[in-house]
Length: 98
Image (tube, rainbow, N blue to C red; front, side, top):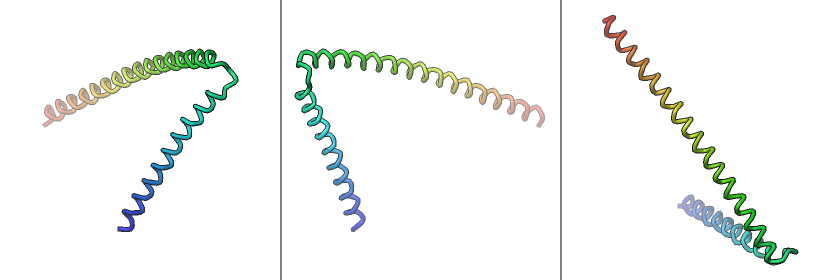
């Protein structure tokens, strides 16, 4: 019984820490934007530019992941075909010997 309450308490405490970190991050980012030395227009322009850069990097990364996944699928299919071929070869060899 005590173990369950300890586990529950640990999960609850971890949830509180994560919630605190998230709220602190949002609060910190808001204060940083409000207290920034640049004008609001300049800050919005920089955020827009950086967002566009991040989107482009994400598209590139997604393309790289997709091509790598296709390569892996081809490799796995080749290996499966090799295993199938060796199994067929073993069966025909076993049956012809027996």
